Amino acid sequence: MTDKVAIITGGSRGIGRATALAAAARGFRVVVGYANNETAAREVVSVIEASNGKAIAVKCDVGAESDILALFDAADAFGTLGALVNNAGIVGTTMRVADMSAERIARMMAVNVTGSILCAREAVKRMSTRRGGKGGVIVNLSSVAAKLGSPNTYVDYAASKGAIDSFTVGLGHEVAGEGIRVAAIRPGLIDTEIHASGGEPDRAHRLAHMVPMQRVGTADEIANAIVWLMSDEASYVTSAILDVSGGR
Image (cartoon, rainbow, N blue to C red):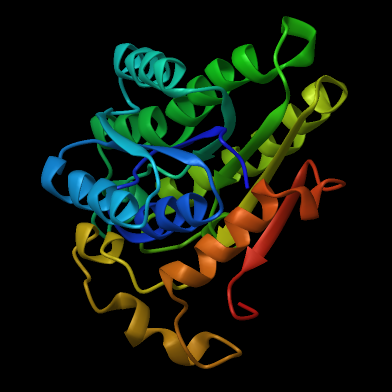
């Protein structure tokens, strides 16, 4: 058990919600970052508190640096940062590259890439033993789309997750001697609300036949992998990317 703080961006639903609950069950004080759905975020906090855990909800659009700074200020007041889960992300509607606007691509990269890098920057400032910190763990959320490319669907999303893969490896090497481990999870087809955001709420189940295990994954299955990476059981794991995708 620990009294360290874990920041979960995009923690109000889906994988983020499951991770917040799993981290709290392991003793972390949880900061639930949310972009818009305050009701959902506060419900996550209530569930954690009902089990004698500690949590707060903080509004944070990771596409805005000022929101990120406010999120980490709130975490500082809550305890000592021990983990960051860069879970917040967006997906656009199904579209070919030839039809994408510059605005769509810029927003995708601002949230999925720049937001994750800026959150990691703030975490490193607090965790690095070189800066007086006590170490910690950063877990980034990638996607098997980084490997598959998502043609005819959302190549821009896939490209943003490819950037997360590279960032995970590079940052992990950069801070390995400073008490910080960095890893990523590459989920496959997971039954969450993100598919509805892309205009295809049934997408995961429609494509389940393409998964070697012949089923979609659950948010809890991803959360279990994330909290393992956050734990001392993964103490020799850094700059690593773990596929949790049913073999896809």
